[in-house]
Image (cartoon, rainbow, N blue to C red; front, side, top):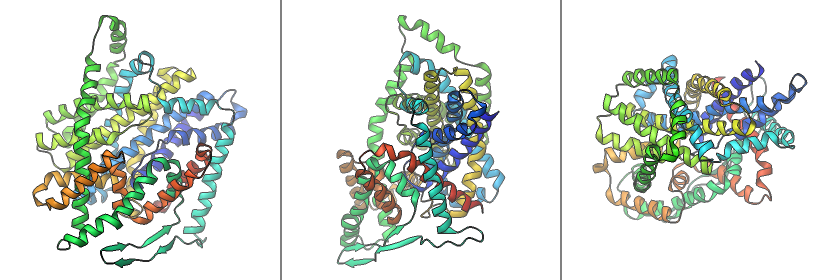
Length: 536
């Protein structure tokens, strides 16, 4: 009962934290390394009643981590609907229970599909192919490490210090805040065609923490984005395009960057998916035993429940039979290939696969905004959940836990997070508003730009679109992420600055990994505080 209770608590926790983070910043770190440390602390408190609680920690972590990837996919893709059709989105938001129902149905249906795929290929990937699934190995090492309790205490310190900071900054009840929320570093300044915007430092611990943890990924491209806005994009606008509104110019320029990224992703992705199809259907005499084990892993009851859920949900949202078949087939292939990438590298680049499935569907089927967004979200959730489930199965193998036992806890985590995600998103969006500094939802805006470009290409200024396309192409050739550069270009400077500061600090620390527990506690605490503010 204790393990079940902790699993439920960690599922709610990971869903809440990643719901906020997925809309606040353009990256989605794995939540599992954070929740395993919280799990260790909780079970340590009950150590008198438990002889060996390593298995309980593994089970609760595997259950809790599902909510993190599920919430990340919803934050990245589902929120695109707001930018495509704000009236429709707000009408859903006006009915709390309907909004929760929609996200529950979408999350559970796509999550069950991802779970079914993971069940199907667990033996092939983990036993036969011996893929490492690095997050599963990391969690097992964390549980087994002698210094784990010390790391958990560091995480709790980061959590508590940040909670006090937020309390003294925002206040709560009779406690009044006295820490300033921001400080102006540079006032707006214009010189000829160069314009330096207002540069404000927000005292936002979560941004510093995430910048620190992901510094090697975000610091450089975000800095390039900010500098290019001041030294390149603004001057281009001033020299030849002042006849069009600034917002129209920057949206068109960024659309060119998005189009460039999507195009080159399309060139590479089919080859990757073709390999996946070949691997799925590849057969040889030596694999006869493996094929028998593959088909034995198909649970009839699970398959029937999944099929019924898919049919009911997709018909309710007016997907045609052919579009349903298209979505299921390509989600299956994408989840398979993404699981291989996650098994080798520990990464889950859901975006390019979601784009690859969504864009052709726009031209093949008569889809509305809801269907387009649901396709991208379905692919993101199902492929992300499949990866997370396999991380947990790898952990089970290393920890000597039966696959069937950890499977039940992962189902528990999926159900709890599906019930929680709609509630959390409703409170956050209702309080902060999508597109605000707190919930800028860059990934959703990127997808909106892509859809808008493909639907309305004739209305764009092609010169501006071409300039953005060339800039995105050059960045790709330099192996700099255009999407993160676009974050620095498009996001508020104060948000970008917070992430860059954290990344810069990380470069001056001798052993960055030693500080991860502390900063994980910081970003978890700040995220929970934002949710508390949204509710109260």
